Length: 162
Picture (cartoon, rainbow, N blue to C red):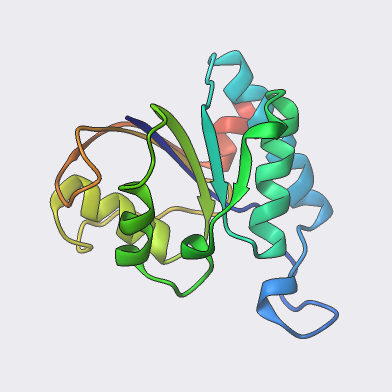
């Protein structure tokens, strides 16, 4: 499986409701996410499935990427990617996936821990998924240590490629 992991774009610090799950992307976050989508299109990236946290900032990030790549019908909510659910819940969901090219859109620290766990077998690898950061893993399995790192881009890299 080709597993792509994207952290949500830049978001407001506090939502109007005060709830973390309701935080919106900022204008800058929207623009950088659109640029990321253009860069991914230039790279020829395609997905069979997009799973995104239902939190507003991650869901909007996923929608913008899907729009840029003309694959909005592939977008599905994934509760396990909601902030605070943990790597175990995400791995459990990944084991159910049959598609060969999957994008996950979510939050920190879970995404960095997920990348680390898939690469090294534990969450201790010093990888940090910055806002708008994107990585590609080749996964033999959705098990700890079952992946190889292909790419790791910051939002700045993606904007320059756009």
